[in-house]
Length: 519
Image (tube, rainbow, N blue to C red; front, side, top):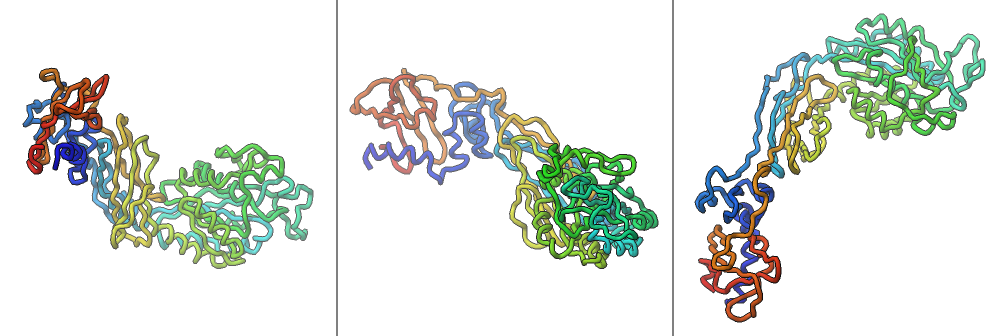
């Protein structure tokens, strides 16, 4: 091969895929780029030293003081790791507290184990559509009495039940505002005034209290088909103190036979102010902002349900099941079950829906700080699932069965303030606290290699590693293509040998490779 051919091969040798990783360290001229390239790339803080970026043994062998070698490492420490025990009173996640220090571009991972608890406490709030078309369902619920609570006792020894109702905003054109609400036709069958939501009974462990309150309910009337169910769900979620939500699995059982009004529909009744996601209940439990605030949107419902950690069961009649199935895909941990026309299957429906929710395990995280990303790989008993960016997921998990999730964390850049992220399974108490921070090893270190010292008026750059040794004599100035000089602009800057004016020239004969011989 001629001399020109040897010169053309030099850039290829430096960037060939076979020399990726640590052997490419010496091409880098900034500390941050160096330590991010490869775990074996280290940076020499001593000014003027060449090469600045190389494996640590190369730097020390070339004379960089050991104290000046920057070779950062991330770290992971498990701070609390209590054993998973059966029963509903124990934390279902292990470990419980992890501390991670991340390097920009480096990935750290750890494993989280989950055991489905047995007998975890349950709070059930029964949210019932009292429109006139649901009057036979009301009769069924009256006859059931305490059977709802008995059904949940099959899953938990600690059960509380509450009650709420909804029909519609008492505003035209949604509801009749005359003295005789239509369509209540019989004098012996009086209707309650329509209400967008009414809190009837706080969560309680007394089955008799639920039966007594249901016995006193009456149907109401509205003019159009959709109901104010969204108003009711939002108030049930944000009025936690009034409803009495406790440290338990929170379930909202929503029973209806028709569709819903959502944000924007209120304009038909002159209501333009959007929902403010605040609790508006008077002493009797009536929703007092029903005339002032529009219905909430689907997105707003999703937010308040997530914040309140409430799981939603839609028990709806066959004609509207497809509508609610579409809706459930936009809400966190919501399931849909078909309700018979008279609600006679509500007990079996409740048991089936609760088991579907309880056997679905999703490991989710709280909001992440900037520049941090997490991914989750689920191990549900078979092979590992595909990585998911927002949480791990296992379905069909049995009581006391253990599943595992691999959590991977990565920091995109520095600096990053220390922060805390919570990992938890919605619907259950207990969480894993993940303490995160990023190490920025190059802060305070010289960030870029300066031009190398001159020898005889010429910068000299050296490259060692991968079996290739180069001593290149370079000069700034103007040369003809004769006399052994060749222009060398393409990679001059990579070695700190660039020229402020004019091209950089390399003296022919400065390249030597054991595999190619001297050219």
